[in-house]
Amino acid sequence: MLPTGVRDNQLRESNSQKVHPQPMDESRSPNPEAVEAIISKIFTNVSSLKSAYIQLQAAHTPYDPDKIQAADKLVVSELKTLSELKHSYRENNPKPVCVSPQDSRLAAEIQEQQSLLKTYEVMVKKFQSEIHNKDSEINQLQQQIEEANVKKAKLEKNLKLRGLSSKESDDSGHENGFFPVDLTPDLFISTVEAAYQAIHDFSKPLINMMKAAGWDLDAAAISIEPDVVYAKRAHKKYAFESHICQRMFGAFQQESFGIESDTLAVNKESFFHQFLALKEMDPLDMLGQNPDSIFGKFCRSKYLLVVHPKMEASFFGNLDQRNFVTDGGHPRTPFYQVFLKLAKSIWLLHRLAHSFDPSAKVFQVKSGSEFSEVYMESVVKNLVMDDGDEKPRVGLMIMPGFLIGGNVIQSKVYLSGVKVVE
Image (cartoon, rainbow, N blue to C red; front, side):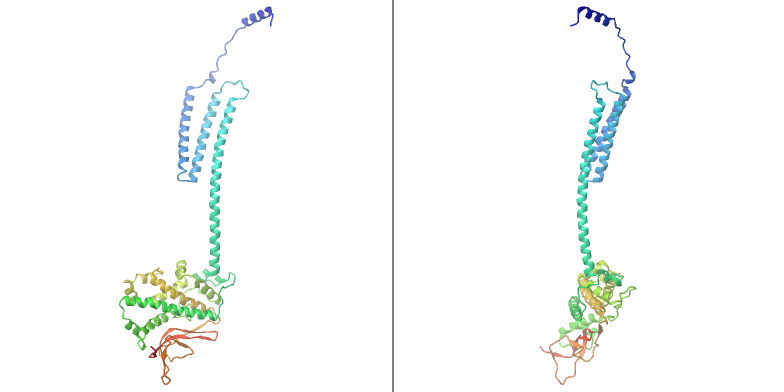
């Protein structure tokens, strides 16, 4: 405790000191107009921020990554603008110095940066989620591409599609030189039998449609070959099979099969590739891939030969299908699809015949020729022939014969005027 004398002296000194009031720094006082401008900017910024947030929400339904990214950028931009307004106000209107040595503005700025950091973290997580989803989609697409490439490789290897293109390139089958089927006379014989069966199969719907259209089948059979004496009326079906055969096998011995093309295959290996390519395929699928291939041209030309315009008009009431074929199309009608099976079988036989070295030779039998058991086979088996009778004569050729590797594949014929066992 201070002595009484000392305390009195301090009080007198304190009372003798004068207090000089310090003028206020008017530059530090807030300007009402500036504050009003800042407030206006804040309201505008908040409105823009609200609009950007609404756009961000709308971009999620439906989900649109591009719109979401654009809206995110807009939200961040508005947040930065708001932050800049805050910094501008604090710089122009600083607060009194705090008792704490730490600057309150620095603390507030740290808090603001932390808020922005949290916003960025949310955005980063969202983008990472989107990237993960995109990566999953990419992996799935890559897997699908790999599976498609495997299927494509199998098709290219097994079917040799290039051998049936309009270019008919000679190197279409040089990929590995391997063929899953051996080129043998037995393969050719089985292909001949398949072609003969295809002629028979196509004649059935053709005859049925003629009946339905009111055709006189007897007169039609006579118009095909007038001098044939049939053992049975039902045998007149062979006249229509003969008609189909004659039209389909025209120009068979030519490598071009009568089809004009600047890029025909001329080597044996290429012919065999083309045989293998079409052997296991649906002809309509093949034509769908390349309607103007040599096979497509072959189908069009043979259809126009086999099916007469009058016949087609009676079947369908118009020539729309014929006109479609003439213009280069391949209709998906049931009748044309049946014909394509026939065309495929004859085309395969031609490709295979010219795969051999030397090529298989085709021979035809004219009507009226004397029957030869070496070169011909009767399509009617239960014939009655007496020893004193003359050798029967050929009435119709149903299927030509072939010579391959010293072997004879007999022509199939219908004999005229021969009796059959009932």
